[in-house]
Image (cartoon, rainbow, N blue to C red; front, side, top):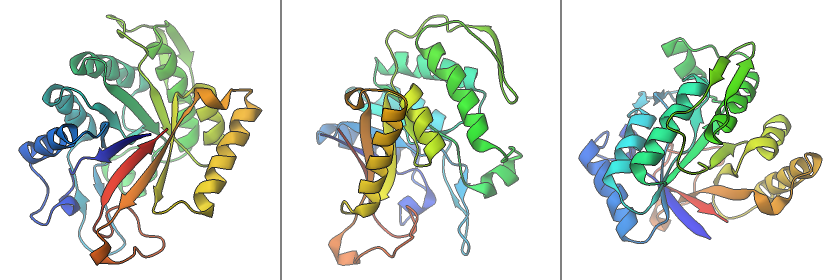
Length: 260
């Protein structure tokens, strides 16, 4: 079992407002010093709740790249990078470079995206998100394996794309998924899978694990070859229990990641 933690980078992560870069770096170094295995960063421009102010945060990839240079041992991951926000060939190039900076500690977490307000505000198309994700994954995964990629999709294209210099190792790809199609894509392409957010293990978690096993069986993949990660909200008992349906950040608590 490995344990990681989400770094604080949004206004809601601190009583004093959005943490500064020195505070983020200090948090990551403290996690490393206390023996945690990984640090992770959300990929959002902001979170806009139904009521109340917008909760803004720093851009994910810039923070991940900075953490690659600011830490020495912990793995560094995105939980998860939105496939709609960046061209997949550029994501692969950025991942190879950040992995080099980190000395081989990057985990590239990918997802289809979900928060409509961000798409509307910044002009990204929000239709057919899973279609876009499938095309992005078909470009990113082989590029990270050192292959030359030509791809002609409805949303993304690549012509004899290759990463030079090539990645110095096989950079693990993690996919966050729970729907049937996303789970099949996970089984087909990913090195690791994520589901979130949970407190104590419950029937919802068991159901998602069973759905993943079914997707692996449908793809003919050995379940032992896919790492499973679970996002867990760790709360101060004095704060009481979270309300059902709370999103991460709606209530005080730290977000951790368990891996096995």
